[in-house]
View 1 (cartoon, each protein chain N blue to C red):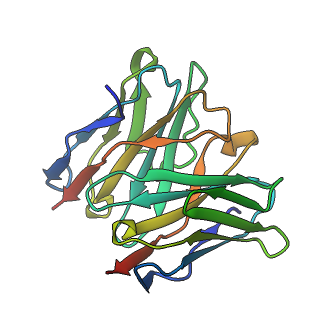
View 2: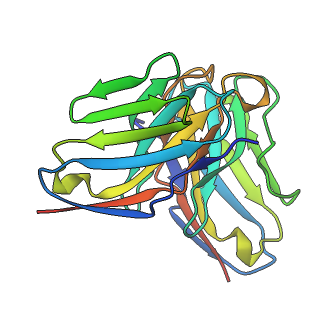
View 3: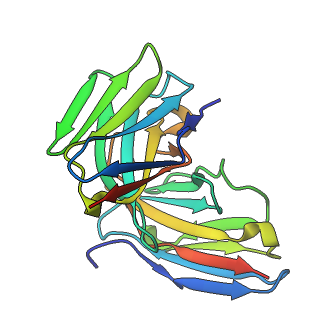
Length: 115
Length: 115
């Protein structure tokens, strides 16, 4: 079974500080992970991804870390800005068999960045 | 168009009625996905079309749900005899080839409320 879990429903940080969003997964067979950001009344927007051949991927203020032994990934946003306030979803993609292309999403974490 | 579009943006229907939700993917994208987000939940995969291949229907929750994709472009998700538990945001996404490790681009969603 393939499950993705975001155990923190919400996170509140001060502008300029680091935001760390966490995600755990159960099935190591699927090796591509993505983070999406979602504003109210809009569809999710792709942020950053990582393949299991790496343990870190960085894009500007956003860095994703992958710990394969712990089946854990995290998204770091630094410095956090008020415009980052949104719901963040992590997702895992299957790369073979019947799960090819399909994304399994976590429940999401609501990030609030205070000015 | 520049992005994935969906219609209607909102739909209110009575229990037992049929509804049709439409998705226009990004031009040139051969892969199309339907997900839904119920209140307080993450995104749940429903169905996936890739080119001319048979769709992956493994996420459809019941036989009341069906989808088709005409001409390799526009897709319609049909829910027959709607139930209150069908109330959710239905999201469509597309990607270039559906071959894995691709970004899926989401539309704004259709908010369905079944009374």
